[in-house]
Length: 256
Image (cartoon, rainbow, N blue to C red; front, side):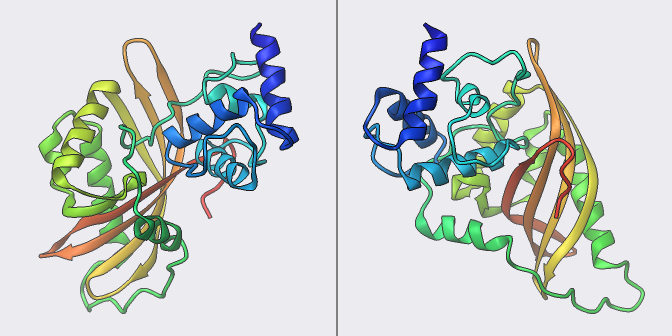
């Protein structure tokens, strides 16, 4: 029965010719992950294919826009083929809960932040380079993220921020999300692999960095790498995060 469902899903997604219950299930799963905003009508479309590509890029899968076996299994619609290992958790690595509907302005911002790149400003005489100071700040953040002290992590965030795929949220939302993530993955380790400053100004810095991660609970563990694009705003002699994005990296891939 499961094998028939797998075949049916693959044919249903590929044909784009008629509505089907299987395609509707894919649409629902993509909608639940806030990637698909079209009708739940069982009809494959270009909008659905685009949503599949975004999902595959986030998961580090080959980006085909098609319902291949790896993608269907990751969406929990079919059992794992023999060659597919247990997937990574279907959540951002640094945070967890499902996102609310994202405002159009936030989606546009999240799409544009990667394009922002400008030469860093000149460094004041006698001060460590900006990249060195930002790297130290990010390392401190990752160290705190390995603990289970919510208040310590909250100290890194601005009162309002664009938070992964959640849109604009406040600290109360972040506090709930962080606490839920700690409960879901009580053991976490992160290693900073590389970091570069994309853009900087008098008050803001955009930085991109990649990390390796290992998250664990009593019954499961997952490892991998992510690319993260964060915006920081100056506050006193330090910074606060005002925008956070994450992209899962496929094995062997390098952060651009």
